[in-house]
Image (cartoon, rainbow, N blue to C red; front, side):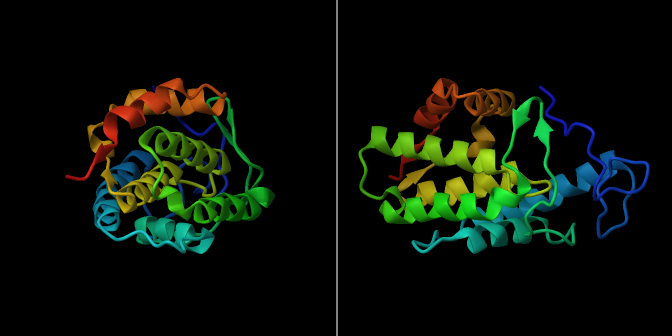
Length: 198
């Protein structure tokens, strides 16, 4: 199921939908190939790092910068435009900082969900996934940043998840559904794929 950005040309080379990048690649398909290679390597490294109890919005931005900084000058900076994807409305760009700050502050107040029973833990993971998806802080790369963040958070709680084993089309469908308030599919994905660390 395609999930393309609708009619966005800001931050792109003139007359294209190819994002301005440090390699000066103006072909969107070639940029996508390079981006996939670089971000997979960076994400894999970051997923192995320990999650910090004091994790805040600057740490979230730093995840994005470390994943995408090789490619884009604006990596780690909040988007300055508003947009939708396949009918999904995201937060207005001028509300991002406050929304993300509040979201992560709530997580910290709940001790990063440490000690919750499994059902309650799943509910909180679904909630923070939906919230960070709605906030959609960056121009590009929100899903990849979110998955690293969620993986670190889950592992901090002595569980594990491997997003590469989850059907990407089904995850995309579940994410779109959750943006409409229907979280059953997303909850099912997390229930089936979050496992205790043995």
